[in-house]
Length: 74
Image (cartoon, rainbow, N blue to C red; front, side, top):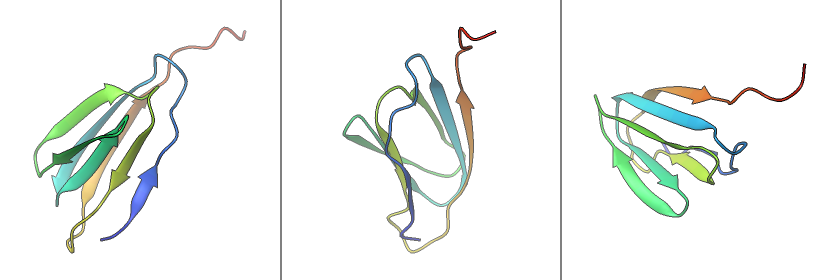
């Protein structure tokens, strides 16, 4: 409860997905706030600023997946 994570944008073309197991997660992407509840997921372009916040008194359990595009480095 009360914790926050993130804020900075990832590299362009990066995608992110979050799935909430328990609790309610506040997800803000490019200034737009969304609430994600138990059993729900959200996916978004992670090349935009984003933040995960627990605004509630209950714990939030989540799984986050970040898909980073391949770099041009050998």
